[in-house]
Image 1 (tube, rainbow, N blue to C red):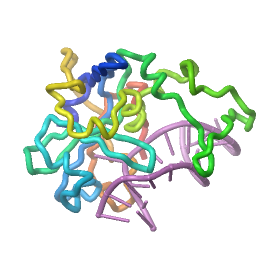
Image 2: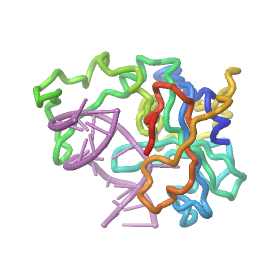
Image 3: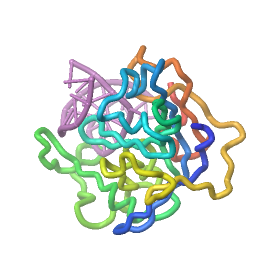
Image 4: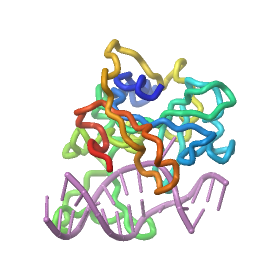
Length: 214
DNA sequence: GGTGTGATCGTA
DNA sequence: ACGATCACACCA
């Protein structure tokens, strides 16, 4: 399913913020049984419960104390399996994405830190009001936590029905790449499920989080 | 282009 | 104690 999701469109019709959408350009597959890199490897828990549920739903998890990441649940009800959404090419609602992606620099203790540019020179803060116009388009959705933030996906979206919406995966007619890019998965600690070449991406797309993985 | 560091907290 | 990450400083 993972490479088949490439070039599909992820949309979030938010009743307040409006429609935000992007084309899926990078994904990773995760299983349960036999996949040491998966949240579901050690069985069902409250956190990964959605992964064991019916397919076509969204599994959203919290990690590193500050980030949300979103997956498409794929296997039959009762069997863990999901595809992590790693990068989108922004299509619609870019201003909304920019406002959600405002970086808030923090130092020790979570205290707001004065933003600094190259050379340690203080620069203008991007937030809290206004739009981060210097944030490049490729920085909006090029990473699992970035895309979740840009689309406004968090705990509230965990378990959501991807057919019913408001979060949906659409086919706009563009097929997956004939020859998708493929590599080992990103960010897994050595010896922990890194043996599976289950990362898939659209070759040449600038929004892919890392064009040349190790 | 690449590497190294610290943030920050739910989960097991 | 650590993680399916990120932003930033710094180096090449």
